[in-house]
Length: 213
Image (cartoon, rainbow, N blue to C red):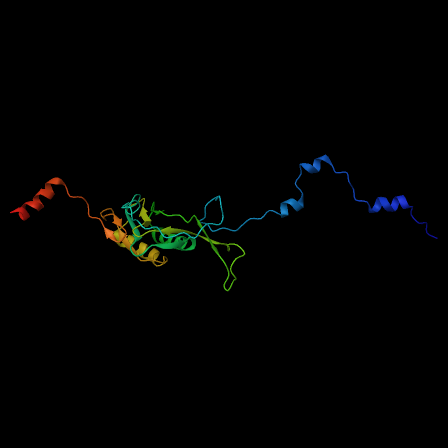
């Protein structure tokens, strides 16, 4: 006959071990590393944000008379918003940037300057969802642009106007609003209004003299 184990040995086998090694406090376990959650993000995304969800907001309208960001600052050629303002996603900006780089890669030293950056999180709820239960989940990054805002510039090396127009035309096809081609001579834009450059005092007096006579 087989000998039955004693009651003390049975309790010792069923009781969980209460002693833990002091080294286990400093070594990360496999369970703790498996709980780390990494959210997949687009290539054009901010490194860190304070709040992942944000209000929808409205498109900016330049009602105060500011023309900042409507002229070239880094390159020789560029495009800016000609129609209404829009919310441009990170995917659209990346597609336009890839189209520009693909077209001007034959020119050594040519650079593409992106004047806007998608830093606004957009959250979307599913279709036919009942009201309530909190805000929707994060979907993509976007940016709001006003009429007249410069989006892309080309520079870094001498680029012919024909090539710059063709490259920027390909980029305009990826964007959701109408754009216009500009250079350093283009006047600033205040919404849908083009602001002519200020005339010198001598030229202004010459233009006023015939009218006074």
